[in-house]
Amino acid sequence: MIKFDASHANLLENIEDYQQEVTRIHKMIHEKTGEGNDFLGWVDWAINYDKDEFEKILKVADNVKDKAEVLLVCGIGGSYLGARAAVEMIQGLYSKNKTEVIFIGNTFSSIYMKQVLDYIKDKSVVLNVISKSGTTTETALAFRMLKQALEEKYGKEDCKERIIVTTDKARGSLKALADKEDYETFVIPDDIGGRYSVITPVGLVPMAIMGIDIVDVMKGLKDSYNDLNNDSLKDNVAYQYGVSRRIMQNAGKDVEMLVTYEPNMTMIGEWWKQLFGESEGKDGKGILPTSATFSTDLHSLGQFIQDGKKVLFETLVTVKTPMLDMEFPSDDDDADGMNYLSGKSLDWVNKMAYEGTLEAHEVTGGVSNLIITLEDNSAYTFGYMCYFFFKACAMSCYMIDINPFNQPGVEVYKKNMFKLLGKN
Ligand code: PA5
Image 1 (spheres, protein in one colour):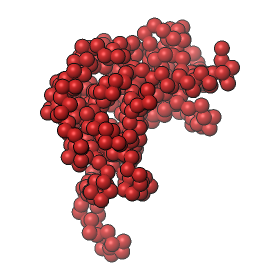
Image 2 (cartoon, protein in one colour):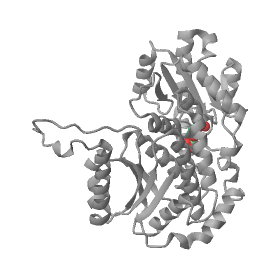
Image 3 (tube, protein in one colour):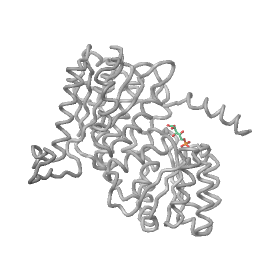
Image 4 (cartoon, helix red, strand yellow):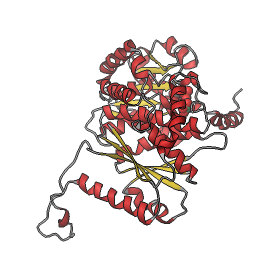
């Protein structure tokens, strides 16, 4: 389902030379003996997920779907990026979906907040607030304002049908509030951290309300779990990718740029940046993850990639068969001189841009490329891809003795901010 190709990367070491280390770490991940082992719930989630809760998601989504001209998803970080990446990858940016999704609670911006509140005034709205801790300030601030707006519009009683809370099973003020107000709640498992949580109700609830087939997401996840549950570097594409990243960094490449040729995959880049950046960037170590969407960024960052300082390698995520395609028309006058493309499919043109760019960057520019090929942009492939990246990330981090599952660094800004805001 996923192909990995390192033949355009000019790796200075053999991937398979790392077999012993990979075997040791694979065991560590599956036997849950490594650092951060209390956050390895995602490893067997494809098998162990709560089936009753899954059924409840389908039921609740079905009930609220017709009530939602707009679905507001309020959350930040791991409680935001996965759902957005999934919806955009699977449905595209301008789908015919009758529900529009707006992500909120990930900024303090007054402009953003005010405009969203104005925008939803005359629309029917369902709100899914997502926070594992239940105390994240960006999310809590937005949630209070949205809750008040919804109560004013629908009354407290109706809000029970329109506000859905995804949070810890027992802890945090959000859980207490949800119980008090009698909102529908979904549980974020204790042993799955934010950036690994898109496969839990964190991602599944918004996806289901948006009409995505979450049964297919879980099927993809399970197949990926089965395919990648082996330590062989000959077969395991996630570990091949994880090891290749390390080989790239050993060769002095401290920056990895995830590149897509599909605008509806741009948020996959954002989600991936959090996954790898928050997991790996610790103790003065790690590769800086960045992302780009081509052709758009070929006309901006393309210059740096081609000719700038040789600090980076690219990881291309390509989609073999995109969900939509069309033929380029011919024109009798051919005044724009574009008839040489008449009859060609747009995806073929995109793939030619990809091949030309790959050669330009690799051969002329000396920039290494790792290539990940996805079959398509379906719900199934999304689920499959999530597990691929989770496994690759855990492997990559453990290879440099990093705990992939904590994020001590993100607390520093909060401490300073709370002091300035006068929080006790
Ligand atoms: O990956 C993480 O753990 C973080 O990005 C969190 O998801 C983010 O800080 C939001 O936290 P919470 O869900 O507790 O509001």
